[in-house]
Image 1 (tube, rainbow, N blue to C red):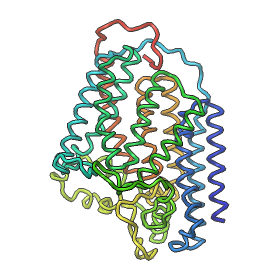
Image 2: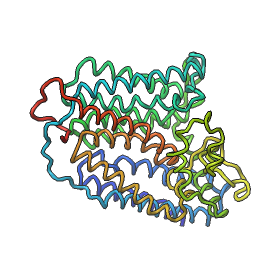
Image 3: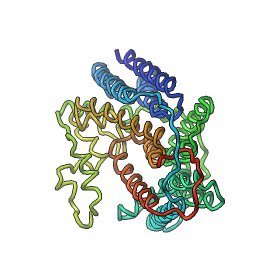
Image 4: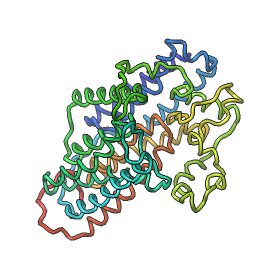
Length: 434
């Protein structure tokens, strides 16, 4: 049954992806972006583990059938949520935006400089400024650690300004400056998340702001190359750093075929089974903690998660509880269970309507980006850039990043709309709605 359910996931995602693209003719539809990652997480990975009999040492067959059945239902609900919003977009007649491109660039520069400065401070505090063996910076202040993410909305604001002013040398230099820390972090700490975010922000942001699309063939080739690059980074995570002389492996599938407690599929399956056997679920408290408790500095409220009732957040975002008592083994520190398992330990069977609503949210943002453009274009690009965390990690990894990226973006956009344009605007501007 497990194998049949796994191939059912492949069939469902292939069918819904085809339906989404056939209806929209848009390579940036959310299912075109997210479905391949779901295939990797819920089909290719377990099939590779099954080939080497890697699941037998962790689970019984009935346990695998139960979990894979949940994954099938989750994939169906998310896909249906994406499709129910409709794929066809009505003809749109762009109008001149009532927005100041100069103000967009000023706001972007402010955000970008804050992001670059925060990154530099975290590197100095984390490694004394020595990037040899660089694994990423650190600062005891969470605001400093997370502020480096502001470079992404900064780049998107500049892209929006270029659709009005045209691309200028200053725009290119600012975007290169702001992206440099993220590129260094991705390259010298072998992190797939920042790598994916850079690629999506630059490529999708550029095309969507101009209401253009690459061909399906080019998109497929670029997506495959990006996927292989991320597997390469993860497979060589211990060997990639500035000054390294270690040999790099080209066997990018080795990380997937390693049956250990840090494997995303094994860990995610364990998360579902442990929560089910202990009948222990959070019912939204972890996510509320991310929104309302996490922003409060620990220096002001040292025991904030304990006092809020979710001390489990301090380890693996609360997803690794009870493994030893229910499964007989412990999940690896730093592991993530993936979207469906994370929602299961939060909402039990209510994870299915939540997955449906998340599909609706992605499709709604995509549709508004198509019809309204402007702010919604940048907002959808941010959601697409975070989709790797959405599928492969936890909602905790998505919620705080989404807030950090979206709130400054929307504030900057409002400032730019209220600022009187310094120079006349062209009569036709693609990608904007006034």
